[in-house]
Image 1 (cartoon, rainbow, N blue to C red):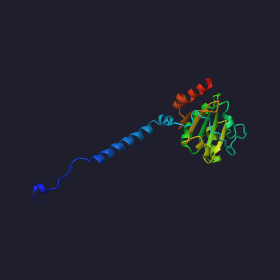
Image 2 (image 1 turned 90 degrees about the vertical axis):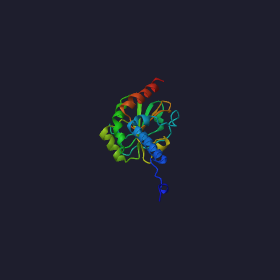
Image 3 (image 1 turned 30 degrees about the vertical axis):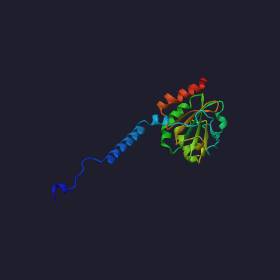
Image 4 (image 1 turned 180 degrees about the horizontal axis):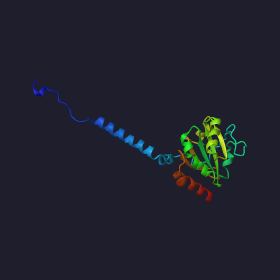
Length: 198
């Protein structure tokens, strides 16, 4: 066999492999960006309900839940949204980010301009009660959304999520993910200020 009969060996990396590697690192970069900046990503999730009337979805009270005075905690009646600035928070005792945001809800509960309403999402009543006894109850009403149907009506992606509803019953703002000090300062409080000034 002479040298011209020997098979030729290609050197270097093939283009399909190189493209696959580039795509992999591009996707990894996007995911890393989303993990590092969760508040920014969460706050940019659009909602088709902003600027529309809040869904008319009554919810029963959480069985056995009481106020600090020992009275039964009311469930959710859509009429509660009329004439008030309402902050509607979807939460569950099993949700770690809900625990993380809870101190900020307790702080918001001190604002006399707003009414806080909780939708307790796919939770057991005893767990929901224990959660609020341990951390404090910022809510004026808590509805039990045991099957998650009401959350679907509100366009919820996951818990926690928070809506601000104006006195006219129209959804003015939505935040996906836990409330943080930054979100409180930059988004929640300015929106409440705006609605209170109207």
